[in-house]
Amino acid sequence: MSQQENIDKITNDLLKPIRFNMGFKIWMGFLLVALLICLYAYSLQLRTGLGVAGIRDYVAWGMYIANFVFFVATSLIGMLISAVLGLLEIKWAAPISRIAEIIALAFAAVAGIVIIMDMGRPERLAYVFIHGRVQSPIIWDVTVVTTYVVLSALLFYLPLIPDIKICHDKLEGVPKMQRAFYRILSLGWTGTPEQLRLITKSIRLLLILIIPVALGIHTVTSWLFASTSRPGWDSTIFGPYFVAGAFVSGCAAVIIAMYFFRKNYKLNEYLTDELFDKMGKLLVLVSLVYLYFNLNEFLVPAYKMKKFDAVHLREIFTGAYALMFWSVQLLGLVIPIILLLFNKARKPLPMLIIAIFVFTGAWFKRYIIVVPTQLHPYLPIQNVPEYFKFYTPTLIETAITLTSFILVLMIITILAKIFPVIPISDPTSKEQ
Image (cartoon, rainbow, N blue to C red; front, side, top):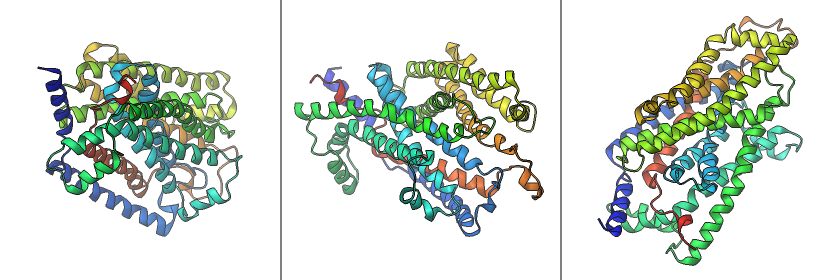
């Protein structure tokens, strides 16, 4: 096969999934119905207030904030795969860079919506910008999340421009509106040396800029907890601890996406077993770093055993949250690390199963960080109804939380059906 025939085959293989087929319509219909049900639950919260959720005066941060932290965390995978590995010129990561950016963009964009879900009066969101103070970590968080969404969108879009032009020229049987959409987004791309130099410099600048912003987005989120004196949150390691955990959940999300794109889009030749093997090794690396921070989080306060730290640690080690805590540590971190040390576990199907456990465990880990420490305030809980003393997510709260996952799935599905999920053309690899 000649080089041109090989290029044509790769182009056809990667463009073939870009069709609004019946499977896509059924899947989007299912997501839309689920979204409408969850939005109805949110309408109940808007009408009656946050009382329909399990959060109360004492546990003021529940499932919503745990979900927000998780979404911000998972969005960091775009920085790890595209920026860190890209700037280090690690070639094996190139085929999955766009998948990582799609996931990063979807999770970062929806993270802002998750915060609104936690507001009893969302119409007052504008006050954050009108009356916000620079000293407030909330303002830092809003600023850095917005910046990260913009940079992630640009980092997704700019490397995509040559492929958009290919979609415009070579996709057949697409609606005229879609073809016009490609023509507009391609920005008159012709692949001239001047265009290549401009886009290469722009992409490299974004890759450099997004690293401190991505580190900032989750470090600032960690400061929302660490800047308080509550046991369980009063820690100086929360910044790097949150970032390490972000890489774990992000890698798991990419592995899950890789598997489904490989199967549903017939991309076995491009999302190869070797690529899954590399991602498995990367997941082991970031998980080991995260395990180190987990040991630090609990070993130091357990050794000192201050009065209120002791109450918190007993609650999660042997109390009401013990089952969740040990399941997260073992099934979501320790056992996956051990399994992924073996070659057979780094095959696509075992990797999918392991990644699902890691991804689920990562969500529950945020729940454990957010909820238990609020159940033991310095002042005793008294003269309140019995249900104020505990936190249990309600059905409405769960449905509203599911809204965010549905939105992420819709964004990923639409982007993956409009654009190639694997780069056809890499402008930064061409000689200038």
